[in-house]
Length: 215
Image 1 (cartoon, rainbow, N blue to C red):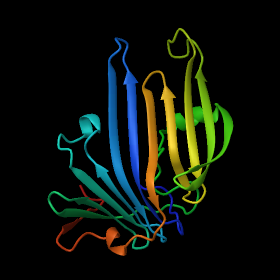
Image 2: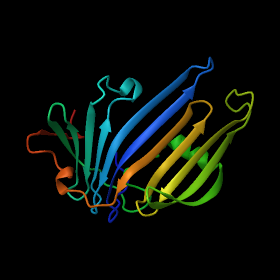
Image 3: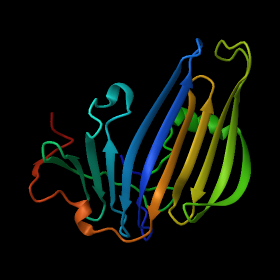
Image 4: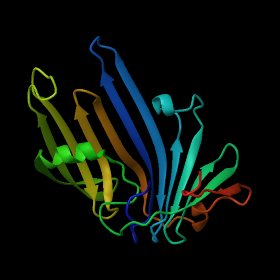
């Protein structure tokens, strides 16, 4: 689901998530997932998600994708299937405005957020990324030895670079010895206002209604 509504910060860009895991026998697993992100000045968002590189959830076809549109102005969401030229329309859930929101590259589970609240946070200063100023932070969480059956302490490091202009993270890097390294990066950023037609199903799509209260 989309995050909070972000207005007056339009952009388009490509989001890439790379996960690298080294197994105990030295085997290496590397996966890449990509998405094209769009947001207009009214807070509408569009995410064109590639279905390849998503492990068991992915598609064997390299060009398969799904498109998700969130229109907080009209109060509706769309899930588009480009292959079948179909779309599912649903009523958008209410949510707040402002804050670190919009299409968030970093995400995060509630358990991870609770862990980070008890971690050590270091400011990394400001850098220019994709032509935009970004403020960096590094959060280090240490799981003590014995807490989960581990012989030695486990250190989890999360680095984020937040763009005040876009009100979202441009780069996130998370290193966890249990799961490997995950890097999510926004690139090819344009600040031009996107066309309104991007936030509507094309005219030749068959649109069906979805009701959350239905069975």
